[in-house]
Amino acid sequence: MQTMRAMQLDRPGGRLEAVELPVPEPGPGEVLLRVSACGVCRTDLHIVDGDIAEGRYPVVPGHQIVGEVVRGAGGLAAGTRVGVPWLGSTCGQCGYCTSGRENLCDDAEFTGYQRPGGFAEYAVADARFCFPLPDGYPDDQAAPLLCAGLIGYRALAMAGDAARLGFYGFGAAAHILTQIAAWQGRAVYAFTRDGDAAGQAFARRLGAVWAGGSGDASPEPLDAAILFAPAGELVPRSLTHVRKGGQVICAGIHMSDIPSFPYRDLWGERVIRSVANLTRADGRTLLELAPRAGVRTQVTRFPLADTVAALDALRAGEIEGAAVVVVD
Image (spheres, helix red, strand yellow):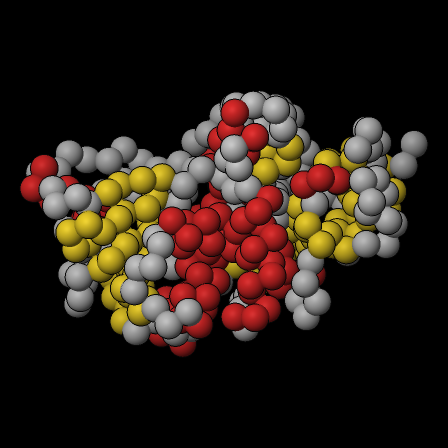
């Protein structure tokens, strides 16, 4: 039996351990991939830390997979380079799926959560939920597009034609979305951790017109604020920076509790909304747009054996851009 190296989580809140597992066998409609890179996402932290705990255990996390098809299906031939996102499969038949909202499917399964993920040498994936990747992006630089980019882009699309955007939390998603928003002619106001001068300088280099701490007042009224940081206290804080009719969009899968706030801060037809997962249409749009917008991801590479160190660095706010596990 052929085996592979993998990083496995046996229970929510447990420790990610290096293990040897059998190379998985693809089922009907699935492809077998040789993994080359897998982005490290804050959702992986939430899974490992037990903040969300509805997965199947033990599980191999990782849901920003770049790999080469070893055994093909669904029109994907061996040798094809593809990306696998968080949304791993849906039922395809419910009202959400048939109305273009497959991201809300009650029977959806998610990569690295209910389906084995990419912190491994091999992975299987539903061929219908694999994306051909644009040329011009090395494997490690393509990986962050598959969640930070895709779900971030869904949040940006929800902001409509907002001209002044506030990004709260300047990690992997914000560093991609700032480049797209600047290319679109929007003004980005970046709110980092208080005192993070390096992060603020990074945001300005990528096109933000202003950068400050999350405790600072916005220099201009915002048309929309997108929250990438999982801190509930930022919801009422950002709401005070949004003009009447504007939106606060919560882009994470998990957030700490939102504290109470005066109704007057919401009044004026302001809106608070969440983003849930992604659709394949989001993926196709973003992967076509990113090269045209000149998006370049900045990554810090970690070998598979150092996946825990990558998660620790992300948790500590030590990653500029995105962390990516590279599989030799």
